[in-house]
Image (cartoon, rainbow, N blue to C red; front, side, top):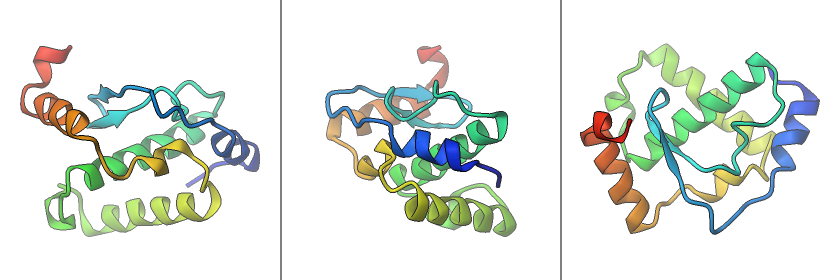
Length: 120
């Protein structure tokens, strides 16, 4: 995991938009809101870190137990480490304010997971 102090500051400085609507990140298999930093000026490693945060939150949104994540125990430990680092060092990241979903967002996520081609 490589993310610079500057990138941590960038993610911590993103402003939460309570009215933002999510899109579905097909490569990450999760919901993504426009205020969460996907277009922030991050290095490739910083973008990978952010993607891993989003993927981990996607598992939380889907309420999947670790055994159903489709990853190895080693990968699960990696995602846990990323999540814990984010919580400790980037507590103001808007994505941490979206650990629960509104019903409309749950429905949208389910539709995307069930039939992703229809949303491409």
